[in-house]
Image 1 (cartoon, helix red, strand yellow):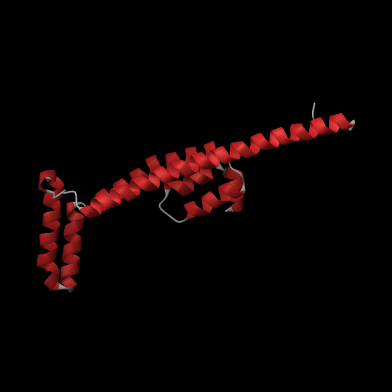
Image 2 (cartoon, rainbow, N blue to C red):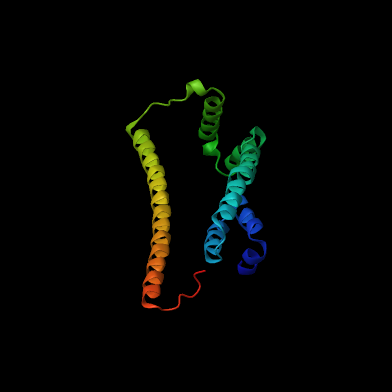
Length: 167
């Protein structure tokens, strides 16, 4: 992974982000270790996750849940466990009806869904807060370092010492 990340950078991150696998965590760690610029990392992740991986998963779900595949699954299961035929038929017919007619879905706002939506919103806001806070702290450290080094150079000049590297 080390040589793969060093040699291929953006394409390595894109490849790891495009396929649903745990290698993406390793690619993220490697990117941090090799100090891959944020723009390079983020652009590869956005393209890999939102475009490539989404379409791969969409095609997979459409293929797996097609009528012929579901019928094959039901016959396969009921061949070994015949008692499941009626419950599986009822379940898949209800799911098919619900997905084809959205009005039949019961989308009431329960306390669980409201709590879940609140928690997701809270996590998004906390992520934004922590990102802004991290960027502000990084800027503050750089700002203080530059002013502190100017302060030290001024002190050295007043004492008559030579200031090196400040042209």
